[in-house]
Length: 359
Ligand code: OGA
Ligand code: NI
Image (cartoon, rainbow, N blue to C red; front, side):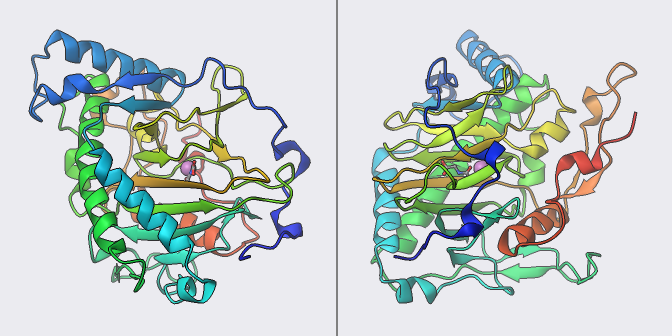
């Protein structure tokens, strides 16, 4: 037993999950098949089936910031091997997992004590970057950016066999999908399909294996506390247990995302919110746990290069749509958020609203 229930896991009363979470009228399911008729080129004159797809993605981003995709092009075998790797890793004896444990110097590897908004999450994770080394800014103690970026490398466990290969294969296949989704999102903003791609050269994308063990007090704790994903977009595989709750932007109710075999859950993160100047909102979500079943999920966090300066896209702005955010540096934003999840801090977690321009 790696996690032992204690006060650190207890959510404030207003953030505890209610026993029943609605599954009705859930997030949209979008069939991505039209994308594959196009052999990767999403250029100016769009065929009708693609026009329709872009309209569906736009509607989903506006209404929920979340949707599920089917016919996404990632082969089922690739996903199965990633699941096997995740299950195998979390079934290792705790001492084995601890050999690749994250620490102050390297945020990658295994970790079982993450906080979200200063409350402990009922989960264990394994984090890896998809391109090595990944460059991130080194944040000096006073929070000011130091000169030289830090290079991050993955920590690979000895077992289970084929772990690294399975996850690298999954990362590669999922990255292809990530670029297609990015291009679709650009099209929904009436921008050239590849408008955002340049930000993802030297990307800081990372992948996480989440394991949520059965929890003795699922009424008090959460697998992941309510949060918004900091990056551009997230591609999440979940198993058939269920537990991801999305906050509805229309009525503020938590809605459970129903597991669909061979699908991915997509959500737009904080960066798409800023780039789109609030046309789209990065939706709040959380993970509920239960007393009986362990749950696994694999998020792929598609993130730009650390040096990218993030601000509303110029082409979208005019006198009726003025920039709502000050420019900020992606790497610093990411590391400030990640450090506060690693260590419980007495300060509020950094959020994009901290860069909001005052009216
Ligand atoms: C996350 C997250 C959801 C899930 O890791 O950021 O929201 O279903 N995970 O595991
Ligand atoms: Ni998330």
